[in-house]
Length: 416
Image (cartoon, rainbow, N blue to C red; front, side, top):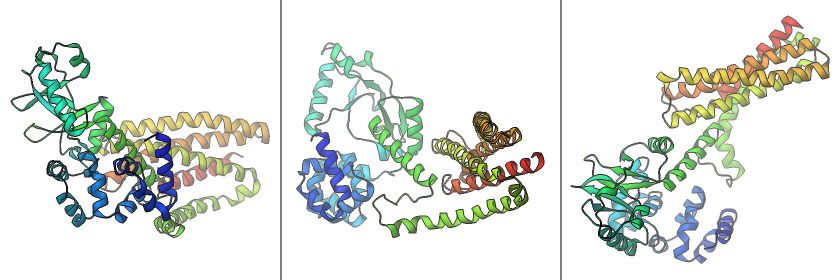
């Protein structure tokens, strides 16, 4: 299917809910899978809920076992069981095997698209085994070399193409990364990031091979995790979709907005302490949103980096000092850069060197505060067993607003 035609169908299915199911049914069954996997979770679930079992089975016939498993895991258990029982025997066995594993672990990401060969096999033997796999599945597999059932490594197609068919494979085995089946998906992502490679072999408790994770699957997972973090950082539920109506969006968001309202009153109370100062120098009111806005943005930047570090288990509460110190230092340096620029504006346009000094110093201090809270808030929440991204921006914004206003207005009161 041409890419532009597929993109057009995905657009139509996404933005025309009334004709969605009719349009999907017009797509050929062998092409429905690619379209379905390209849709958002909400649209995909809507289509699956409205298709009958016969239609889903016709579509699953063209899926890989791992993709079929991903789809079946989204369905209610009673319906999933009926569909699995109706699959062809060989395909059903693979799907049932994959369904046994926790979808949030390495096993939940793995594919069965691989073949095993012995180190005493010749390259001609390897090609025959691969041809049988390709004929049965239509896929080119990873080629894993074993001895007595244990993994030795893999064969690359570059090596296979350059060697005699009668030559044995044992001198051409390349090491391959491995990971346990029950390892969390975040650890899988971290493994790929630290050691970029095209695949990882998944091992059982006894070190036997049970599957392979390909880089494409990890890339999709990284995108999924990134979207999850983005929703949480924004204080929006992951279940919310851009296509939801206004009342659904209100249901997901109003609690965080109410909390934000109360925290905003805290910042306002700090400002009220300096009413006389602001009345004496109205220009301060012009620069207050700048101080608060820059602090909030810097805090969110630190938050995003820290949440990613926590998700990949690069930092924790016991080993966070360096990360927090680096964020405070980065905030200070960035504060100097933007503080100097803000001070120059105050001096050139408002003819007030003292105001420039106050705004510059306030910017430096507030960005350092933002770095501290942007790093510490998610770490503390994680240590308390809470989602490290949930509502964090509310607390970070409160800290930068309150501290920023207090420093800025306090310095102005003392110096101007």
